[in-house]
Amino acid sequence: MKIVSVVGARPQFVKLAPIHKAALAAGVEHVIVHTGQHYDPMLSDVFFEDLGIGAPDVHLGVGSGSHGVQTGSMLAALDAVFDEHRPDWVLVYGDTNSTVAAALSAVKMHIPVAHLEAGLRSFNRRMPEEHNRVMTDHAADLLLAPTQVAVEHLSDEGLAARTVLVGDVMTDVLLEVRDEVGARPSPLLDELDLVPGEYYVATIHRAENTDDPERLAEVATALGGLDKPVVLLAHPRVVAKAAAHGIALTQGALIAHAPLAYPELIAAALSSAGVVTDSGGLQKEAFLLGIPCTTVRTETEWVETVELGWNVLANTASEITAAVTRPRPADTGDAPYGDGHAAERVIAELIRAAGETSGT
Ligand code: UD1
Image 1 (cartoon, rainbow, N blue to C red):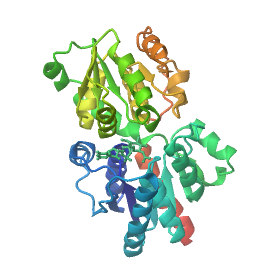
Image 2 (image 1 turned 90 degrees about the vertical axis):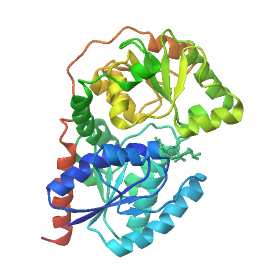
Image 3 (image 1 turned 180 degrees about the vertical axis):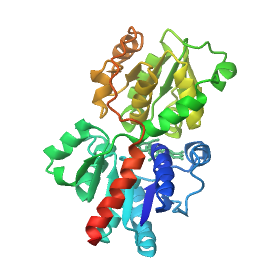
């Protein structure tokens, strides 16, 4: 059996790590295609190195561009790759332009497509990620859902017959890395002279928060006014937008810092007082680490983190301040994101379903 995984952006490299491990353990041939959507070493290479993935087998080198140019270039380049490999499955991850390009290319070539992290919805049609999710789910043959809520969304859209609940593969990685880094202090503490439990970790990169200068200035000012140092692990997108509009990312309590490798990010979050983010993955990672999270958005796909009290949505400056400084929630012991073995279930399901379609 042969699987081609297509990845391109930072969170996809994290999801790829446990899948690659489980594929190798099951004796499955696993070809990794990197679209090149993320090309900075700190957003890309470091993840392959630290998470034991090795190097991608194919690198398309597509790089940045408008949504249409970026997605279209990937689509054109992927046709040739899929034609050469003719896999049993193309596996696509999450909600980026790389996801929708790979799903569309594969489905048009009649190659079965499986979507990992299927069924997430923000119901915000202004988000590029929301278009990507909906289109990918409807194009794919097998929908690998991380949570019961995701299963229900797919069922509401008439996709129940193609859906399997597998759990969340980011939990697999997080639990492993947490145990590795738990014992050693974050290098950020020394570097920035921070005291454990007396700083916040922030990431902001979504178009909704970065592309409008007034909005970006509002978020930066709110973070700069917080009661403890705020380390902003600045994605290239936020750095570029801030520079273009003359907005300071180091102001008041706010300290801009380069993005961190995955184990260093987890170590930094683990000894922080809280996380402030618009990333999807980090909301869940904070929850799994038992660190309060404030999400700088008006909605989230990971509704369980909010329902269980660990995550608060905050959009305006005053909402951000109130949410970040709220009292710590109580631990309810709920585990909505699975048991850390989702990747094994994914590979087992791909093997089973491939057998079904080939009639074995
Ligand atoms: C993408 C995903 C988003 C995901 C995020 C994780 C889409 C539509 N969005 O957003 O869902 O949460 O990745 O980080 O696919 N850039 C660099 N170096 C890089 C990559 C990007 O400088 O290695 C800059 C470029 O100026 C680029 C901008 O960042 O135009 C945005 O990159 P892009 O890949 O379009 O989207 P992200 O904001 O990273």
